[in-house]
Length: 99
View 1 (cartoon, helix red, strand yellow):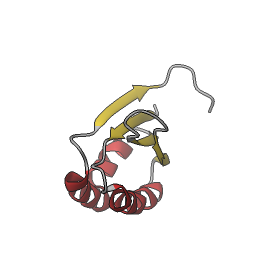
View 2 (cartoon, rainbow, N blue to C red):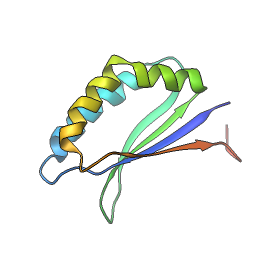
View 3 (cartoon, one colour):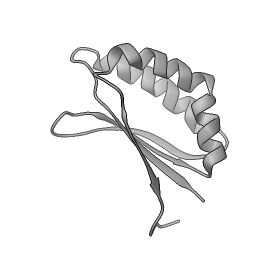
View 4 (tube, rainbow, N blue to C red):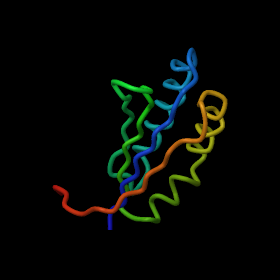
């Protein structure tokens, strides 16, 4: 069963460009992983203007492989100094989706 993850990351003022550069590297590598159906980066238009990772995996094994990947770990290390705090990670189960 597919697994959706939405992650919200607040970034310190002035650190946005560095965050985007690190995130784009992670996004590109993540899209090439087996079992990653999509992996996109967005930004809220209003409010905190947090960055939003919109991810879909084929199964839990794909999620686990992603979390263990070198590029994801490297991004986590880079983002640690750029983020305002821990990301809000929301795993979701499919209810009614278009395949």
